[in-house]
Image (cartoon, rainbow, N blue to C red; front, side, top):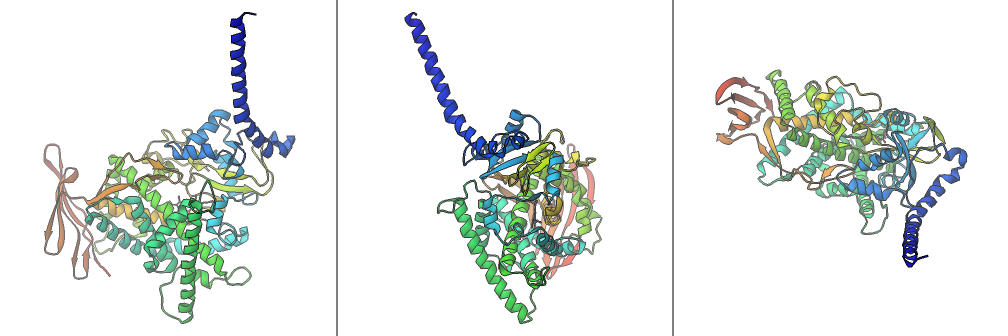
Length: 557
Ligand code: HEM
């Protein structure tokens, strides 16, 4: 053997040793995890598990999950599974400390969400701890859940209840928009939208928005951040710890309101009633009053569910509209039509008008499809369950990954594009459009959140222009938020403002139009909601159209 051959063999040997060490270091621990969760189920069961990979001991696949959701491409997590294991629509993994199954086909998602017998609530422990581990909508039995849900949805569903909230929502929206426009510096749109929704939800829960304090909204922001904590460690310095502290503070606030309300109700004082009073008066199936712990957790959870998600959705709707001027124009025209067909004596929007905003509703659906929120809905099996020839073992989590369905080109062509017209004749296949979930846990606030958003868009697109300061600002997930909270300038949609007497008048020449708009004037207690006289100028200065949009008076309180 020549010395050259010996050298070559040595190189091969070292290479083999390095490869072996890599396999050992990186694959062996993974094998252990696979064995820990999968092999010990027994050959019969484990061969029927969906394809996938259980990741590393203890942390499972959390590193790839966090890496994907911290990148600008959160879909890479599921796409990677599809790439490795094919389009099975069901994969095994390990996330948030639990062996889990991801489902991302419409049929399977529907099956999981509508079968309460075999799939129970299964959110990560961080969320359960923060919303009430023992007594909350998330943790009560199915029959108690049915009863509580009936009670809770009555103030936010149906024509009569929703109509009652419109006037207040309008007041909050109109005054917030004015404030933003008067403020010459940019606003954080997401933060401001949260404040609007917080006021609305507080009023629905407590009967009045006087209960809000600046610190309460901050506590809520901290609580929200901890819900999907990848490291639910209750030690100072960790997000989860801050969220736990925020929960404690908020519970104390709610408890104090509850005690105060009990006294006031006992004294027969005439106070504006909210959901809190319904809960105080309610009796459960055994005729017992609801316990304090449950009431306080319900209020805490409702306020959280009600303001964060709606604010995010309203943000993306606003951003998508302004990034697509042709869509914005159509939304605006629809709103103008609504004003035109209104009786001059009418004050503000009605629910029937909101229901006539068909084009806006398509833009809304498209927003919900695209923004991918929530990214998944969590369940847990209470027994071994067989679906589509696969076994999901007892106690495993099932993650209905709606984000993957909403962005799947099989169901939506050009899935990453914002195309409201795709909804013109589209009847989504069952389970392929589930932004509000499905089955007995479907979001009870869906209609209310639409009403809030449509009112906001109505006043916004008719009166204001919007300019994002950092349109390319990176987005953070899982609840998609621009890193700068969408810093933006909101201005009256006018070129030159002419103030006459106490009237607010506008001569404007934006978007190729000339005209006068009295958006608002105050004279005593009279409020002229909107008068717009517009002359449209198209093609080298020709006046083409004169439109008198609407004049409405209302007595403002
Ligand atoms: C765009 C806004 C919203 C989105 C995307 C959204 C999404 C969802 C989804 C997907 C679920 C189902 C969770 C599951 O099955 O595990 C849900 C449940 C829930 N949502 Fe919403 N939601 C929104 C607005 C609201 C509002 C405004 C409220 C309150 C007024 C609300 C209150 C709730 C409550 C209480 C539940 C739990 C229902 C139950 O367990 O029976 N949500 N939401």
